[in-house]
Length: 405
Image (cartoon, rainbow, N blue to C red; front, top):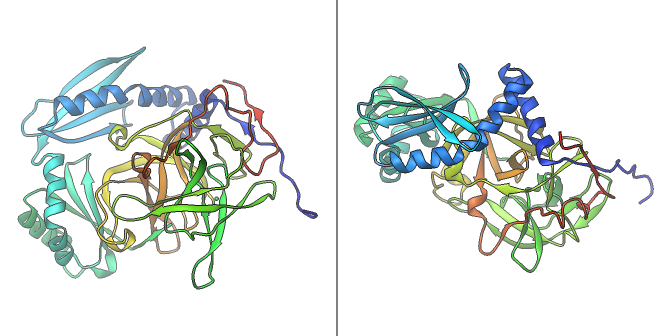
């Protein structure tokens, strides 16, 4: 291993410090004081139980549910039909969660998703260059993505035809973008060659277990034979266990990770590792949630969730993509981020699949598979007092703990 400069030991970032780092990114991006950013991310976590109850209470009329970051922070529930605007403060542990109920939507979320399932082929015929579709929870509309260069008619004319076809409110979003599928601690680099000998690199997501062995995830469209490259120059040939890459999944699992702890790297330099202390399902995820990712190509970044019901273009899912993908606003994503961990603090959310790349390489948004859809008996490996910081992730000699605050 001569000639390899070994990296310093990664810092193990405690849960509160991890959330504080993500809050700092929130503060810079949204222009609020750091303490206010921390308060809002605490509210984001505390409000999950509240929004679950609201989804149940308004199931039949629910047209959308999202987090509004303007004029403070609040949960907005958009309902089908007439509903006087009502502002509430609902208890959630030590917090009071601001909630606004508003009406005026002409279709429920369920009706929009049913329209997508029923008319997907016809929608694609009406919209040349269709690049996916989904439900916008902020407006209650069916949103169809279209490659701008493929547009043959005015957007308003196409939208009117789509409304007649589907029976639900519809909006065309035109992008001059290509949609593409975008390595053993999570959030690290893996490399491999495809059948044609071309070299690829991807990013590992999270450590997983089936109860008897430990593995690491990446995206299923990455090569099957992969070598893990640690931040200190360690190379480890991983063993392909299985891949699942149709409809609502894009994930593969590799074993041979060694005696690793359930950690993932959260920064570009892979100098900060976080424990996985829990996870959120897709139904728990809201448009407007602040989430982060660490991709091998674009590094670490945080942004807002845009949609939780998105279907990418069909050719990217081995057939029709289900409306189960979560989109996150750009501009930081790139090819090579495939498989990257998506998280908030030390909570796992998903595995990055791909993105919409604008001319010049900028990223309009990326989308990920929720950890709900891990296959078979595989589940997230979660940090406990017995394993947190005791073992090192592959590629590091050890860990230094960061302070709690």
